Image (cartoon, rainbow, N blue to C red; front, top):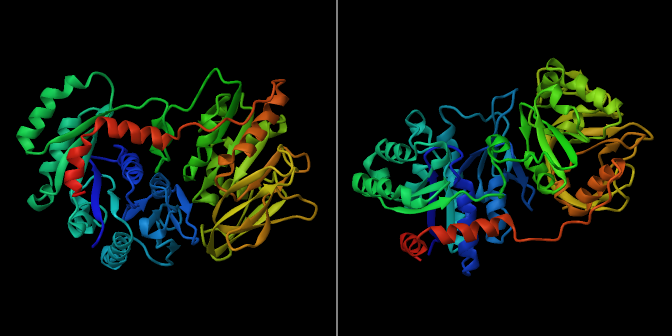
Length: 495
């Protein structure tokens, strides 16, 4: 018998669908059910590598962790990654598909892949929590929809429609979304959820009563805004959606806010440290007074390098480095730090060759095959971290970088295939370094070791590694279970 299903859709992007899906995965997994997440198609630059080496949206990896299982490409069979060269790269079952672009025949081509992936999950688990994308009422996209009501109809899934009251207009959004749907799709919406509420929920009682009278759809609950919480963000809205900066923190770290920034969740663990004021810098002035700089990953290295130069950010970065401020480049940011980037087959840009920032003696060549792999290892000790500090993470990149003779790697890694490799590069003075390893700062010993070196440079005492506390997803799961009518939800699911 196939697994039960429940689907989370929203009135718009960033209503909290991904987080709520993760919370439900956690809640029902705690009750002993085998739970898996699913999102038919994800448009996101924040991605993750599964154990089999496939690439999926970071949100589905987060939801899988909430369910206590390893992520799998079936959980996000289609991943779309925007770039400057092609408009959008299509990643199908974890692998980029050359020449495939969203268009007239796109939905018909990928739909069988999507349904087969969902069928496989339903055969292996007790419950599949399905996430939609954007809004199901995008009437101009309905013919090409493979992620909202079309998948709900295929799975015969009850739908929970989530509205974000923090942005205002939640009642109009819920009613308007419902009315724009055809009658058969409207019938699949079994309950509303009002999310991110500040204040006394009793103020909403008359509005909720009107909602049910007008639409015939009950409200499953009102979720108060949960302070001091963060989950894995899916898109760049997440950079500004949650407060990150702590003005009284002694360490200020500036992450360059590139136009095609990817995997910015790499820095969430830094932002959570009590002594770190993390900011995303979009102007040269924002780099001033930083104790350390980070050049993050990007889906369009050459275009973002051009942006750095046109905005004066490149000049400002060089000035800060010359003033003694340390700089770390991650993935595309690592490539930018080198002497030269070559793209002989126009994999990423229309230029065969561009000069990098010249801060590391490396050269990068883009290749047609993407490297997606997980790895563990340790530091070499050539940079601002002690040798042998353990690290783990994953790589997602098209380019291969070669160090000049005499340039030390940053990391020594063993990938999932058992191959040992040296990764990254470090400048002779140890202040500038780069790596392909995403998730570097999720390694607590590396993160605290690097921060303590920064503290020492400012005459501050070292701090210990933070002890483990209740996870964000556990907090959110407790929060959701407290404020939703779980008995009614279980009846909807058929548990």
